Length: 111
Image (tube, rainbow, N blue to C red):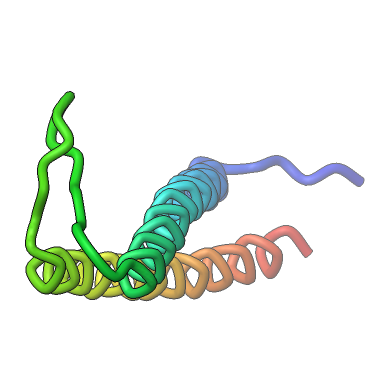
């Protein structure tokens, strides 16, 4: 026997879909930051290996820079990226909890 879906159920299903889309968006953002973090870590490793001059690219120019200043800059960038990733993970966790709650409500009503 098919059960009619009322407005409240439809709204809950839409909330689930929005939460799922939000989670997907967060995962994409997190992936971008993880890639940027890997690149920053690689740059830091290469900088530590270099003995002499260090250069950084600004726009279309390669500029000679102080090695210590570049290390500080890359370390700050790495810390900032890690904070962003942690923030995205918290948002992801909250959305997943919200999604689980809505999903269980919908399933209870449909039984």
